[in-house]
Amino acid sequence: RMTQSPSTLSASVGDRITITCRASQRVTSLLAWYQQKPGKAPKLLIYKTSSLQSGVSSRFSGSGSGTEFTLTISSLQPEDFATYYCQPYNTYSAWTFGQGTKVEI
Amino acid sequence: EVQLVESGGGLVQPGGSLRLSCAASGFTFNSYNMNWVRQAPEKGLEWVSHISSSGNTVFHTDSVQGRFTIFRDNAKNSVYLQMTSLRDEDTAVYYCARDSSVAADFDYWGQGTQVTVSS
Image 1 (cartoon, rainbow over the protein chains, first blue to last red):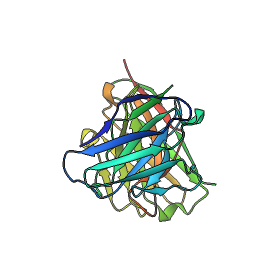
Image 2 (image 1 turned 30 degrees about the horizontal axis):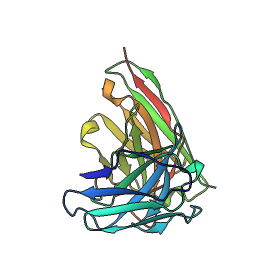
Image 3 (image 1 turned 90 degrees about the horizontal axis):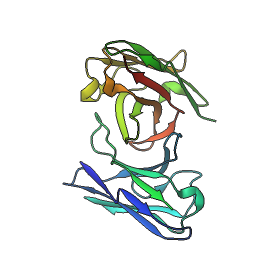
Image 4 (image 1 turned 60 degrees about the vertical axis):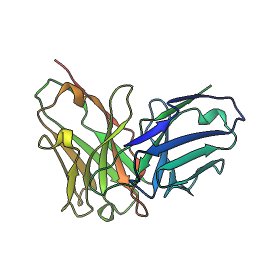
């Protein structure tokens, strides 16, 4: 099971923020991060832990290994206020997501 | 441009059935695995079903096993989700999502279709 923290994060434009995704045991070596805005479909931001999806701003970055992974936004912009989900590459036959982190003003 | 367009959602009574469709365009559909992912009101994302590019391999999450069936028609560039014995807890927005070709994640998503199970 992947646990995201915090569940909610209050921040301001220009802030550097970090969201963490932790596993209770080493279940994956890689994961992805998605951004979802209200009423919209999720959007892939980061794949294979640290690779930036095409078209995604370089202020987003991912890192981690083993049981702890992080998504960092270097300088929060107004359009970044959204909910973020991690998704571990655990097993081929079942996919899971973290419970989400809402980034709000 | 990759596009995934879902349809078929609606209001259905508990125990009823519904078939969702996802029409794909802008890529070679028969080269990609496809998925359905749902999101209950005010909740997080839940993967539901997966189908391989050929349609020969399918997986479903435990809570829908035996009730939902994913299938595809590569000639029509479409993937479907047949849902039967629907329950209140199946109420959600259902998204069609494409498997990435480079990793075990979902690189393109449709806009979603609302399924409401209620009497």
